[in-house]
Image (cartoon, rainbow, N blue to C red; front, side, top):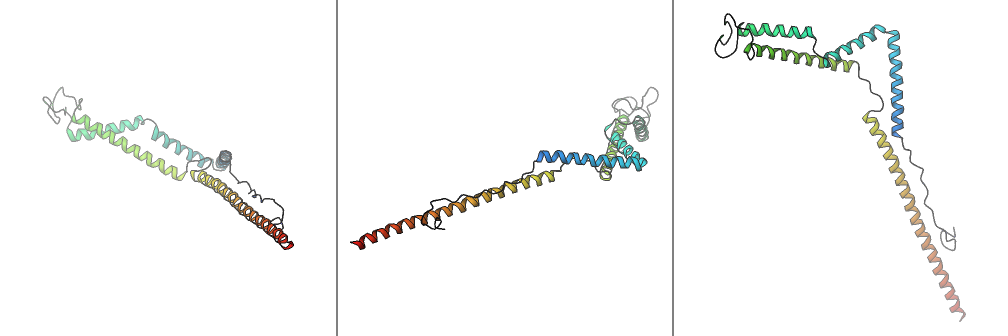
Length: 221
């Protein structure tokens, strides 16, 4: 007590060391999360194949076929169907002769011998091509929608942390480190003011001692 409030000592108060912040090693955590997800999915697949083989095969076949329809080339039989329908509709609308604008053969079919239906640049061929393109686009739209339904029904697998998980880990690390810095600053500030008070007490004690000595000398004379 005498060292703190004057009268000797001469020591200084040291700032306490706060505990080190708990920091998550995010790359290591991500590897562990990936390994855990892969193990869980592998067990789930093994269970499905063992106890529900028909359901498993149907699921895999449906997903594979939908992916092939969406990304692969158009099936030849389906392409022939689109072409046949388009030609029939164009012939019904524009006639069966040469439908090219200009001379010879007429504008809208019925040209007679030597005319070719749907020649290059003809209305009939252009209409058929547009019809096929429209059907193909509709088919692709259907496949995209069907794939979206499968994605909802059989959610695609994700391994490791989601963006939200990673954001939470970064936030946790920052919070722990900020708390550490705050505790360290608070300890340093407290030690500073304690040392300031200690110095003031020592100065007052020294001044009092000098005055006492001066007073004693004056009384002696």
